[in-house]
Length: 86
Image (cartoon, rainbow, N blue to C red; front, side):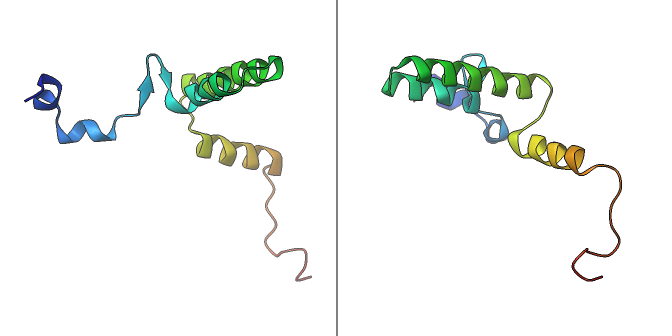
C-alpha cells in the first residue's frame, strides 16, 4: 500500500486543494496560459492569479467576495417595500 494513502484520513477531505502555495482557483488561469500562450493571456493569467491570491490572503472565497461586493454597492439602506409594489 502507498504510504500517502495509509497516512490519509477522512478529515483531510475538507482541506482546500492547493497547487504548491496557491489555491487551485488562483492556479487555474496559469493552466489556461499553458494552453494558449499569448501576451494578453499572460496578462490575464497573472492578473487573475494576483486577484485570487489577494482574496485568499484576506480569507474570502469567490462567493463570499461577491456577496460582500453586492452589499457594499447596495449600501446600508434597505427598502421595506419593493419599488415595483408602490
